[in-house]
Length: 294
Image (tube, rainbow, N blue to C red):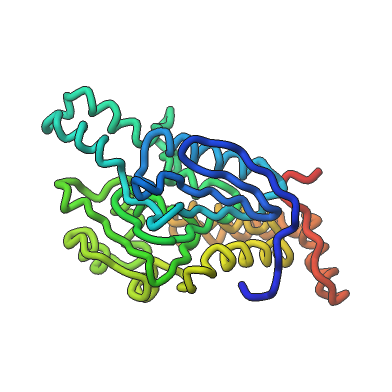
């Protein structure tokens, strides 16, 4: 859906954080992990700031889609190694003072009985599409973070590395659920057990990347994709379909079809359905309301 010459509007906003950058250029919100000297290694502060930025983007009706990327050579190199060093010094029971810092790598939700209550699955509940613009290495806990985005676009410089087996760890943060559903169980086990490096072209072949572009086209491609969605597609429809796809990973086909029937009847009564039909009949671009419009 890219390549239609669409350009974002001039209106912009910016919010200042410590370890990320957050900018909105209608209709795109861009979250940039901003610890380039540490290859954007993940910290508790970064996690809290990403969550806050996602919440802002979800509430901003100017935002139709969100792009997440990293500053410098890496997307995100995984957990900050200083935190992992502190955590490992506590032994198997995690009793060292640094263990508390390890627990803060990701802010834990108050409840843990839902499918999407964790910080990374939280991305799946944001009712706007999220694209990971993979500008470099994705390692460790950044792996499930990127897989919880709706799409991943990369370059030949993109690199995926699970790393957990090399650190004496396990498939963390839901990766044992996410990865097999994307690449199949045999490939997932290979990537998890070997911790081998998967670069751009192979990443696309395996399904880790949706699209492979030139480095200087990475952010323009993502911005163009979201701008095209804003021009052609109903934000309300996108939000509902995203929720359908993720929630129905956990149910059978029959339940998914019955739920879709209910949602389809509801969609017949929305203004977006009338506008979609009329714009087609009148051979003009549709004028869909943004999420949050009265």
